[in-house]
Image (cartoon, protein in one colour):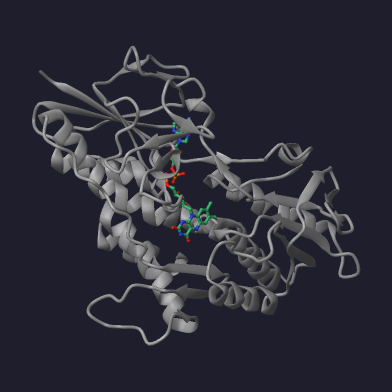
Length: 389
Ligand SMILES: Cc1cc2nc3c(=O)[nH]c(=O)nc-3n(C[C@H](O)[C@H](O)[C@H](O)COP(=O)(O)OP(=O)(O)OC[C@H]3O[C@@H](n4cnc5c(N)ncnc54)[C@H](O)[C@@H]3O)c2cc1C
């Protein structure tokens, strides 16, 4: 009997899983890949597009460069998952039946019910989002003057917010544009929940880049032209970018699966409350004991390497492998600069310091993205993207 395996999403989780499934599945399985776009976006470099839209061609890769000819690709919006009927529901296309499905749809922005925030902010979850932020920043700076610079406010100082602020600072410098940049974080420090050493290193780079940092005061409301805080004075904005949190995709609203904030609970095998439904990446909360796997590209990428084998094992009725997330460290850019923290030694080399910047961190950041691109396409393709990473 032919087993129908369907993968939803073309991010790190989906593209990586397609790669492993293509080598793991036997002749008797049929692989279908569904995503709303016909390319893979290296989302963890999407902030580069805010500075320069031309970067887009170096961080997007057509699905046909990743998928084998035998893999069927359907470009469509997933609108639902009926786990009883075993069908994926699509907008403007026929339902797709599955024997096994992998949910890898990523996440969407969470607004936590803060009044006005969704209506008045831009977000960064796709290529179109990055292009929209670029246009908004450019337009606001064209209408501004040195005396009255454009106010660009970024809410949320995690990976996306920090790197977005860094790119807007590069845009300002490259175009001598009158822009004032504010990075706003509700918690006490930027890059919350991380080591104070990397927090300080990032703060130093952002402040050197002229980004004004506001911490320890949550946004309580957003209007067309300002945000209000719990305690501080309101802050005006011409452009407001919100990167303050994630939640699961609306497409999973009605899926009858165990979920938290619409993210699907999965065992360390990636199996969910329905044994024929697997989930990885930002769409999933993958059990790892005390803490679930983090919603990062790094975790999605590692999980994708194992999930293909586990789906093949499930088809064959063999026991599933248990996945363990390995934190290989963090590398974050602030414009052209970067900070690396607790990066696991590679090639037998040990690193004398926990946190470092300069050329080594910059090069490492490029290498990480290049290695990912090479793993789903080829080193030749990755080499062509190098200057934009
Ligand atoms: C600006 C920015 C910087 C970041 N920096 C880092 C970093 O430095 N390091 C790090 O580890 N992580 C970083 N992250 C986080 C990282 O990008 C995510 O954790 C990662 O993308 C999750 O991978 P994923 O495959 O689960 O989801 P995604 O990469 O978001 O992929 C989801 C896929 O599903 C598709 N899709 C979504 N909805 C639908 C639908 N309804 N129908 C069909 N298709 C759909 C999307 O088009 C996409 O192809 C960053 C994120 C951002 C936004």
